[in-house]
Amino acid sequence: MKLLMIYAYRFHFRTAAKTLEDVDDTSEDGELHNAQIAFIQVEKQDEEDLKTKETKLVKNLKWAARKNDTNTIALHSFAHLSESKADPESTRLVLNNAEKRLATSGFEVVQTPFGYFLDLDLETPGLSLARIFKDL
Image (cartoon, rainbow, N blue to C red):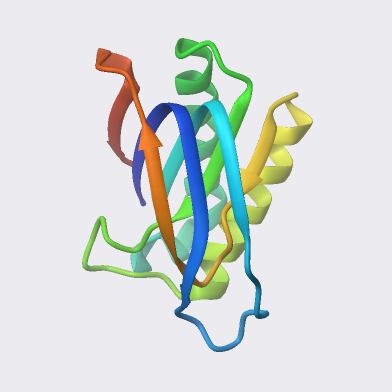
């Protein structure tokens, strides 16, 4: 699993193009402020032990959010961090489970629309912990 975490003063997203035929049609437009944004790629080899990868994902997100003094986390499936891609259902399962676990820990969690390319607008500070990449 690859994880790019970006702390954002402002994160705006809008659906642009549907990429998976089996997802519902939607038109979403959302904006978060002072949020930890997680660009997540679940890889094929992660399917052997999704629970362990999910736990590492949640721990890293909690740590980064606390370091950036935010209680808001956005989960975004981003299949451009590696050539290896898990099945879409495995990715969706990891994102949904991570959302539940983070919400149970008191975080406000938003998932961007799954199976869509999005128009993104991101405003982020020039701080060392504002951009963190992890290979989980």
